[in-house]
Image (tube, rainbow, N blue to C red; front, top):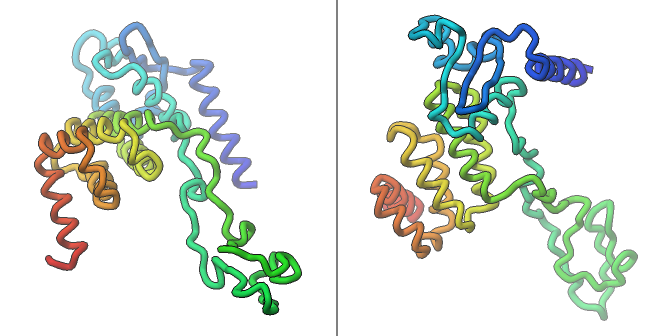
Amino acid sequence: MADNARQILVDSVKQLYASEKYSDLTITCGAVTYRVHKSVVCPRSEFFEKAVRFKVGKEAEEGNIDLSKEDPESMKLLVEYFYEAEYTPHQLPAAALELRKPDPPFPHTCNNANEWCMKFLCEHHRCFKDCRQNCHDFVCQSCYPPPLPLVDLEASHLLTHAKMYEIGDRLQIAGLKELARVKFEQACLVFWDSEMFAQAARHAFTTTPDCDKGLREIVSDTLNVHLELVLKEEIETLLYEQGMLAVGLLKRRVEGEGLG
């Protein structure tokens, strides 16, 4: 019941934007304009809140904020976030990324077909009765289902999330930064070996201040887990460009080996 009520509220806010009813602020990005609502935008962004409170220039006086220097696609996703607390591609459920490591007695192999194997492995499988003593590294798919298919995730989304984190930082939108961070981390778990990883990592390190560890920690952790990536030319170049990343990676390796 509570979920239904929440969805009705979300849908009504989305419809408020779609209809442009009661809109009192315009965001301009090049040739595109977004008719939004101060009551929706300002509480989520310190940048917009200050722009509305302390009007500077004719455009601000007329209720227009020009952000034409921003990436148009990022602006589109930003407005989506304002009215849905989400942006495309949507955050994946944990089950789509987590694969539970089977506990004993899995994986199971019947030791010898000449001997009786009557093990009751779980409520879904009993040797001899269900497999005719022919188990080979058997893992029950009911107890340990495989991850959900990642049909909505693409390698290019690595850069999308890095850009959304950047705009969240610049426009002082804490909620957007956290959402983009989580999505970036999810994408790195899947596409760490793609060509887009180096591009997204470079964007993360060059568009936010050094003190902002949000995406930087994820990039460092990913490289630490998949150290073979440093053999790629694009990652080697990135490490040369970003000395702090190289030093951080080295420190992680030292700490991991118990040498620190």
